[in-house]
Length: 570
Image 1 (cartoon, rainbow, N blue to C red):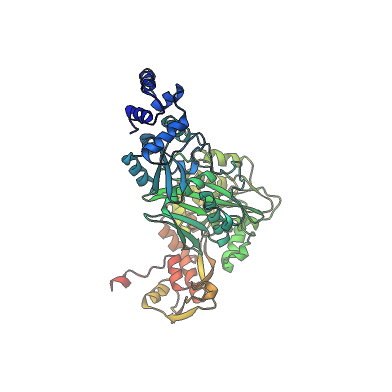
Image 2 (cartoon, one colour):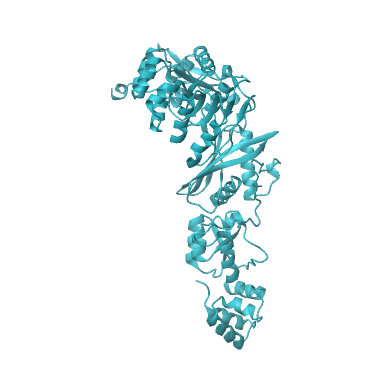
């Protein structure tokens, strides 16, 4: 609670700043027009605000903070949730490392100090301010309850809100000061130079752990002080043009930064966790060059099938796989293989921008779920002959992709899934009619990126009984030995060097189309496809092991290579 009226008055009298008559006059006026006593004395001209602030500083033994001359830092202010700032009448005004400077009218309010420490996980240093200035600053920064906050940054640099404008400097990060802006800039610059596909910022009770995903595996980069997590979250939300007033919701957005002579489009996502906001920045950027289908590692049979599908006048081709498996690269290669100036080709892939001759990019902004149907319908009015709608991840997009294929267009789309047969079940779960799927689906392909063994240090070891069963289960004779990773300077002691893709391609025959129309399960479709020559991801992974291209451990990590359950029960 703020100091009592008599306490402030007595303090000012004791310091000779006012006399008893002036105090009584101010108290009388306060009864008629309630307000902070110090402000009323200042309005009457009996004391100036600077003297009042100095007196409060002496009384509480803490530093004064004049909000007229030193407005709050927007990054520091938004470390604290608005409801706590309003409830306790406090406001973070600056940060010094892992210490938060907290503006208060009563710096001895232990409850408020404890709440801020618990909420921010930072050290807290109180500074005293004039009550009227504090209340106004809290309204300015956080807004009135139930209304949008005023988010005008005061001291922190904010990126230009113009679409796709770079928001970080490409200067040497080692020469930067240790501000949050510099920390974030340095992280993004390092991440783009590292070759990582994503940067993970993970809060823990005693630290913030930074990890890269490189070649599909997580690698620890370093730790940061735990007190920086909220400031980093705010900075990244600002760069992604996300509202920073809501600290309890999962959010995502795009950050655009310079990379070489062009721009890198980064996808930012944040979810709340027990220890603070957990953030991931996906770092695909733009490809250094567009890859052709023949460069993606397809087997000769599968490559021939894909080229044939790309020549079809209509139908639906779906590429499936988990995030980071290279789906967009394959889809862009399919579009590039068409190369027919007489066709109108439109891509709506919002996650990946590929520069392909005669291909129009319809949009770089992901529409809200409620707008997807209108968004695709508007694109269809552009009369595309070939359409790439991006990733099918919601019912409206699934139905409209099927409708586009049924209406005479060739559609290439991505989906997140485990394998080709399961993509059919996913389409049905998203509301697409099985008979409509059967009428337009011409092919499915699934893929993974798998690490390849370092040729400098790879070795061999005897095969285990369990591994023999895995080979036999997939119809492949088991070898006596298998390759294994060792590690050397060439591969930074990981045993692996680079990645390559493995694929399965499932053309939809009349028999498979009939099964799909009847609503058959993925297992039934898989068995029927195997009789027609379908080669699964599991078999492709094991073939790569036999070629000494990867290890059995990596193959089992990348695809489901489960031996019979009897192997575990004896």
